[in-house]
Image 1 (cartoon, rainbow, N blue to C red):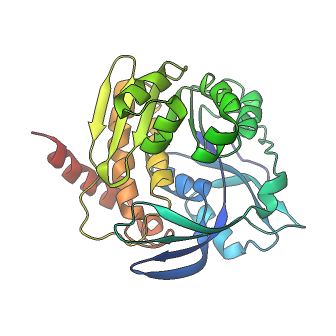
Image 2: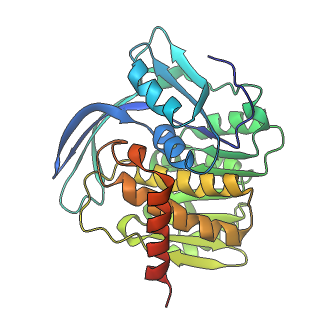
Amino acid sequence: MSPASSTPDLVVVGTVAFDDVQTPTGLRADILGGSATYFSVAASHFARVGLVGVVGQDFPDSFRSVLVRHGVDLAGLETDPNGKTFHWSGRYEGDMDQAHTLTTDLNVLETFSPQLPAAFRKAPYVFLANTDPSIQLSVLDQLESPRLVVMDTMNLWIDIARERLFEVLARVDGLMINDAEAKALSGESNLIAAGRALVERGPRFVIVKKGEHGSFLFSRTRLFALPSYPLDRVVDPTGAGDSFAGGVMGYLAGANAQRVTDVCRAMLYGTVVASFTVSDFSLDCLGALDRDQLDERVDAMRQFVTA
């Protein structure tokens, strides 16, 4: 682990992975993936990002360089010399609205217990990507005085660690979750009821991701809905949700903003960033994105949603 030069604006704790992805448009093997990877590259367009995760001895310098090239601080990226990097294999069919997981090799994740570098503990903005709620709680205990902490989760933890998940939810400011997960976690069959029920669990806001149908924000003071960016071709949906989260959190961290109205504006940027991610495999499109391209599409998106 290399020393951090300074405290990042935003820290993400999540996975760095090798992905094998098959979609109707093609097949790619051993490409760079993982929730923290997509999140940090997306967020790097707005803020200084620190990544906390673990890889194995098989993780190539070329992949590490991709993250460094985007200004991502890797002081929190551990390398297990005796293990292999997390590996996920999945297939998309038809309209590609859902990934069919073929294999999941946890490898170094099985024993990972994140220890944040001293500078990362002071980060004002933190995102807890999808992982075991016990790990999320341990990260929360390491933070000093964050201004905004947002979490993600998935059906696995909803099914096997619901009470621990509610402990995390009571300690964070925001939750990002997809519509099926929101219903499962809340126990509500109606999405609006589900969003409102989750806000009552403690967070100031809940963002429900609905894939190609956009996103919905719930808070005690406001509801806000946003469509997805209209695309006539999707290549690979992998990482879209993580890129959306990275765009949202990156915008907020870069602007030092925390109000619900700011989160609504940030969702616009997250939506646009995700639209670039799905346009190619891995980071091929997202990684080549520049701020002018992003802002141009944000302006176009504003036209779509303004009467």
